[in-house]
Image (cartoon, rainbow, N blue to C red):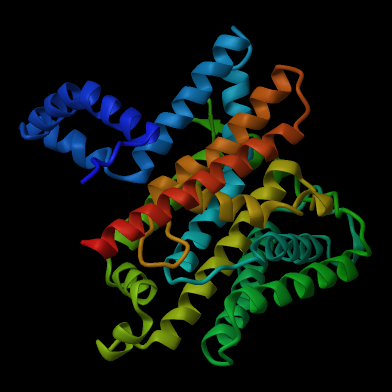
Length: 362
């Protein structure tokens, strides 16, 4: 019989495997130690690798633009800009953990901001000098508006059985159109000055208040997802909806709660946005939903549900902002940010597919 000759590709793989075998052996030995097992578990998660990518990008831009990128002003600006997106991305993480998707969050944010600003400008009067009572009313209206859209999304998905992609695409158009109608397509200004003071205030070593608020939302979301019954039910529904139903989980009610949570957080983000910019920024939310979804996927949440992490989402939401800021400082067109984020997104989805195939084989 004629011996089968290895192909060039097989020969290369064999040579690489031989060269790397000592490194693999040392890593396996390290992973058996107490500290090594912690490190090995950490790097078995997608969030750890995304964190390394984020650190690499920040160091790279700081090397290419020394004294310009990792400055106090630039880091504070990036953190402030990312805070609103992080809040809606936390809600999006819960939705995608169930195997769904919420395309409407960006324009629910816009609608909630418009209704909140209109309440604070009731009667067309200059509300600049209004007090905390009006601000509190605007906050309640923002939350209520987001909650209402979230409940509507949940009812359409859970009770009407409309696919989440179509349901939230429909409410995206509805909330967008109603926001334009209510505002006549014009930004609403002259909000109470104390809102601007909140948006610009800094505490704890010059950290913006909105950044701390967003971090608190992320921490609470992480605790709920990983340590509570609500989080376990969310992941169980994403893993297998029928099995969750047979286990006694009221799937329809829980889905409504999850979408209501996503909408409410979009309303909360709308109020934060008003505090930062003291206007509704109608034209500034076209890509908020896509950025939130990209951050969730990049952070390790599975597209088919059942696997999610708020820590990963927090890291994932920072990557587009770091790319945008870095390209701007280097004098490159900001559109390259979208190219880079798209490439990272595809890589993250491909990695998720590999993880799922590996789990299925085992």
